[in-house]
Image 1 (cartoon, rainbow, N blue to C red):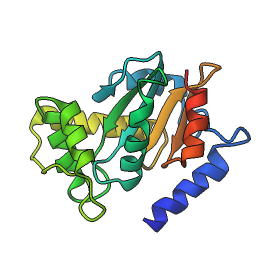
Image 2 (image 1 turned 45 degrees about the vertical axis):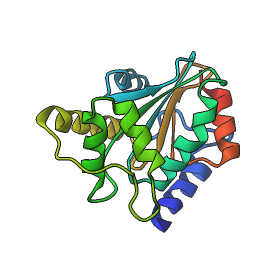
Image 3 (image 1 turned 180 degrees about the vertical axis):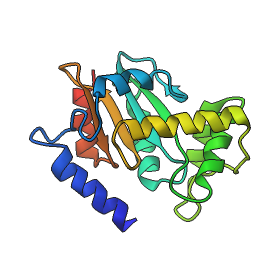
Image 4 (image 1 turned 90 degrees about the horizontal axis):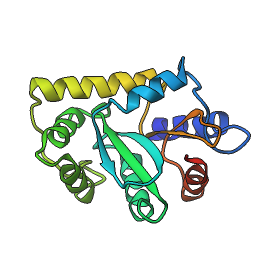
Length: 186
């Protein structure tokens, strides 16, 4: 946890730059190319607003859980669409829980169940499952997309800013930072 927090602080200090927001494509080549590929990811959508964010999450990530919880009341009122891209990279149970979410009959309900049952000790509140070939391929594709952004951790937030540039931030933003992110999502 301390190492992840240190990476997040470094991202905030170095990556969020002069605007105190996010970096456009830092650490990845062709940010508009990988941003376009996000629409082809295996994501779970919440909301139908004009403003779109993609967020890479791991079922066992406490920062992802906090971000998920903080965004729930903002999705409708803030004209926001969030597309959650589930990866399984943090712990030995992450891939099985991510597979359970993506292979569920209703992945949105499975993600909600996982987040609702989240515990600091055990992470996401969903039972692991062995992925079938289709789910395994989806998880691998999602992880490749995360790598394509140049990010090394979760949550990774990706959106287009007011200038239409692909923008990303790695780590869980504070409530104040989240408000600044949301004001620049287009």
